[in-house]
Length: 342
Image (tube, helix red, strand yellow):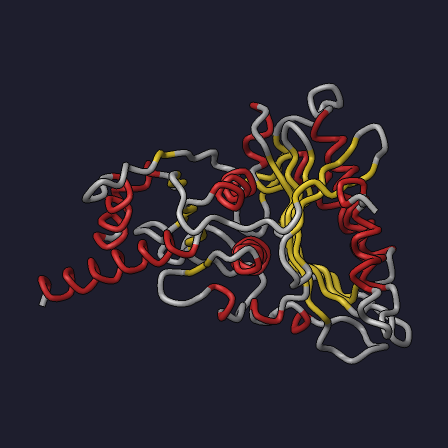
């Protein structure tokens, strides 16, 4: 089969053939996830016509204004995934507590967490948005109701993760622990077709993606590390600054072209803004599988264990050499600051 004509379902089936004991539940989960992303993509692309622009008039558990499309995306994912029979526990940015599902015998083997519509504050101006997800194998016993512990697992325990990007085209990027693949939605066929095989992030890039509007609130170490890329020494050219403000858009560019994506902690948000479980960990999993790195500034993001569903964390993602250079500059600046203050 020509890989360029391979559908998402065929790719997952092909992978499961390597596991004779596979029950088909994981395939059903990915198919259901893909269906939900198709429905969300359709609604995003006709948001103005369908009068889905603007806010829903409520705030989520983090105190953020909820867009109408946030609610639609969340309801679509929850409805689709609860019906597929493969899921024990569902967590969402829009839900204060997880949905815990009863299972029969060995059904409901997986737990999933997602940000249903990342970057939704930009939807009214036509900026790219997306869905981010992480999938774990459940820890609670088969045949019982799902448990929050099914999701509070370290990133190293992730079974699969990815995101759907709703922009000029709809692209589903994911990994099941054997590299990173990208599937582009063919609107005529209504199928995700393999378009990006074995995505590898370049060790070094030329783009730095960070909200410099927060610079005055950063620590001295963060400012100096960022300056290392803005005004490098020697013959290396300064990195170009590119920041969309939708994590999926900025991360997608970084994954394909290299460079750095940063959302550090600051005086206002010491633990950062991005959520560990359904934003930082799935993206770190993808970068790890693509040969890059993800860090909170001190440790690999994949080594962190979520303490609660909506925990926040500083995020550094990028090509391996770029992340290592940033961390080196950051730690050297931290030591300098400590010795000066001492």
